[in-house]
Length: 384
Image (tube, rainbow, N blue to C red):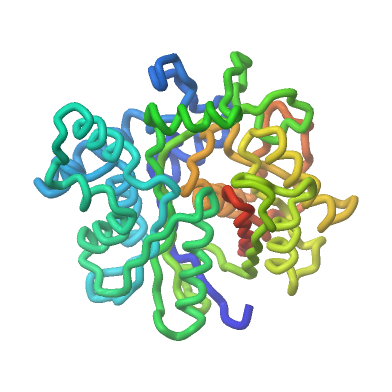
């Protein structure tokens, strides 16, 4: 990349918690964050926010009468964005852009409003403005009193990393000096779970680890949904308070055979990784945080793509979906958070049921992958 991009803050709210200390503590243990809730007419494994994070969202909702009608996906993004802005040292005097996306958006509210319409034949006054996708960035901008551009988008499960790409593009173009980017998702609803079950990819496992992400020998798909949001603050140039740097970005799209297709060796991932690594010796990549959602084909095709790019000498491989499930549009930024924590603490976080991988050198460069339905792959290389 021609210009250095600094990450000056990252913040999240998820089943892992909402503070760096709590999140790292939870990453260090081998327990997953899944519990069973009544969804889609049956007990269903999901990764919901922890009790403390639920309280944070409840207090945020009650803090302003206008916030009481907002979807959880908006509130999650607002909570994470407040913390990130504070940690980066940004103020209302700073001009910064916002790009926070979501795969599903206001799913919970949309389902409730539509259910009310079917029962009464009337739509609620706020049904439309509270369920539009632009709702997320615009409300975050209102909450932070920012004055830069506001962008929202949905590129399914690679949404958050596409937001990172957009932020990098704005910064490198000279049209902005600071950008807040990320993703938010609140998909723990009846209809969303039903959609995943219809695709035959949702976990019905009763094993110790019901999501078997990165288990390449599994006989059935084991995807589980999680909720949460994550955002990071990007600034142009090498700043004194940088937590990490974006060293490379890559993106690619598959030629579709059907709506959710991906090739046997994930051509999109091969292209996105090669683009992100074009100025980097492959031996310098210490860890790859894989997308690995826990589906048979999704995990295996990504692994084959990594083999194609790296050959026989693979970096350490990991994913967080065995612990917090698939958070759709927020998943990429939560993977970035894990990557930055591993670099910060110089500690590899593996998958407990996978073959042990030995860390033999400092973790200084981590590659993060994400891909969505339709083969929209993104790879981001971070460095210390």
